[in-house]
Image 1 (cartoon, one colour):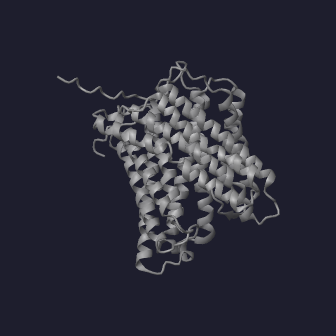
Image 2: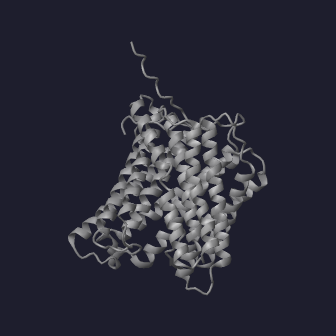
Image 3: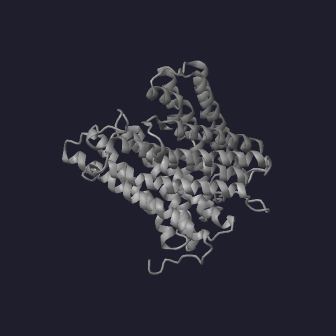
Length: 466
């Protein structure tokens, strides 16, 4: 009689929280992130309306669209992501350098407030630079500088306070390695931004200047966000009861592969000029090749774990599972769209939205995981469960509409009459984009509602009658 084949070992990954609890600095970063996401939702409503056929006729489209886009992107990507990174790094760190921690948070709060206030207190020209669009005015640029200094201090503290990982790797150690790796990638991004400030000629026109200024560091930041997303996938999988058949050592190896590609960025600075075509191409190809090296095997292992675990009966796990599946689906869609890009049209923001919103959904899921550790209620009930599905489905419709329209050559970073929608198919594509965007906005704002309910320490919302 033959022996039964040995079962493949599986692992649950989670970050251990210090027994002393989560400190006030981590809470401050969480509040900044939630405030940024709320503000970005408000600006997103105006942004989507400005690109929706017929509705946009009632808005002062051109400058209105661009200003709304600048503030929305900076709140929903830059501030939200940095704030959640600050939350996770503060939790994983040793707790030293408190003065530096509060200085980093204070500078980022001040910078965020200045960027949000700038459209209402000054007349500046919106510049649609990739990664970090700007309003070319004193208040906005001063706010961005303050946020940049705060972010630099945050990264420095994360590096100084990173805990030593036990050689006998566990799920906790693997996630800590991922967070440490994201801090290293962030340090590369900070150095890249600094190098660009020194090297990019200030005599260039503003559009060209800011585009080149943020290109190298902006690409490096994508590795930071990808590493945070992968940590989120593994953590959420463990929190939903799924056992991932990747040992902590293999996870560390894959996360190391995700980190290695970021070092192409300094190579680009040393080997080419920052204004050259080669500099732009090197950074672009590094991101394309390095972004999915770790995401594909980790994503497949998480999917397999979810399938084997089946549907959980625990109400508290349903929102986490929804956020995890939605995140992986959107990342896959964004990656697939990236392969189809062959011109500068709205397929580019479709690819970008798919990947970036995948990161956002993973971080939303982690917020749901962390709320009880902050002393709040765990999100549960229909509202909490439907929020990630609604947000993810809306974003999927949004990017499908953009891909559809991109096939007809509809250009990016334009709105209203500038879109030149000639045929019913083009109008339908952008209309689908608008509908999907509005659904996603509702899903994003529901996230804030769900979190606010949990933070009020009320009994868990059961969803009856909802």
